[in-house]
Amino acid sequence: NAHIICRTRDFCFVLNSKEVRLKSSPADLVTETDQQVEKMLISAIRRKYPQHRFIGEESVAAGEAVELTDSPTWIIDPIDGTVNFVHRFPFVAVSIAFTVNKQTEFGIVYSCVEDKLFHAQRGRGAYLNGKPLCVSGQTDIHRCVVVTEIGAERDDLALSTMTSNICRLLRLPVQGVRALGTAAVDMCQVATGGADAYYHIGMHCWDIAASTIIVLEAGGVVMDTDGSEFDMMSRKVIAASSSAVANGIAQVVQADSFLGDFSRNRA
Ligand SMILES: Nc1ncnc2c1ncn2[C@@H]1O[C@H](CO)[C@@H](O)[C@H]1OP(=O)(O)O
Ligand SMILES: [Mg+2]
Ligand SMILES: [Mg+2]
Image (cartoon, rainbow, N blue to C red; front, top):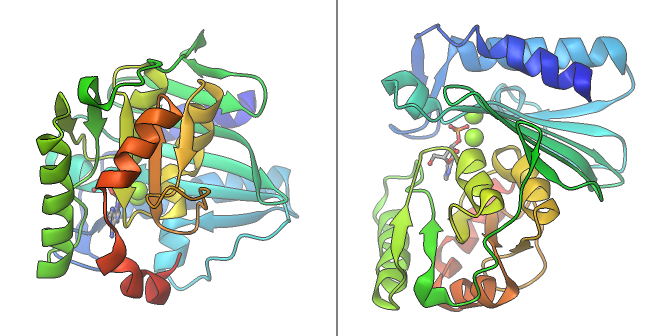
């Protein structure tokens, strides 16, 4: 693990290329750096573990299938927050999770500009730059700061679902709604106690695989937006400081109108 963490830090210094292209929407961007970082990570890991499998955002964009099997698998988002990266908005992360038998063994989120390294190993706690993390423990939804993401979709259905979810939360009311532009770093805020909950509809497994184990090991709760068991391939997540808060968000947030699209685009 230490080896991988060191390599992740090294790779962050190459985040400088600015050639930008569009992917699925006018707000879904990719740079040469996304692709280079993913290639470097995969080739370095593959040298050491030639049998292991990979699910990487840019490999999938290039046509590879997204299939989580029981084999040891590295789930990689080389740059989480590419729009931030392109605009120099200072929240950008590398996210790496490792699964065996579909269970996450450890996760690493490196918030490059902040120089914050979050990591967690199953059963061994969550840490920020080596210091133990603990969720806020908040149980009252009305006293929560909730983090979410605006998403990359710009069609009417996606926009009305996203904005009405935020409105319903604000009407509860909650004390604040925030969006940093990187799902991985957003979710790590719950692990630090800086935010009480996070929800996201439309993200992929590579956005949240590492931060999920970081939240769980910090004492948090992770579930589907409909209140059912979390499935990292379902493209929906609630992470919270307590079950009470997670259930409170599940009662408010609606993903129904997206579900048809999700079954087509299932990661
Ligand atoms: N289609 C999509 N819908 C929702 N979130 C997405 C998305 N595609 C990417 N994201 C992720 O959501 C956050 C921005 O809203 C980022 O973490 C971004 O990851 P990325 O920067 O790796 O593409
Ligand atoms: Mg991402
Ligand atoms: Mg990315």
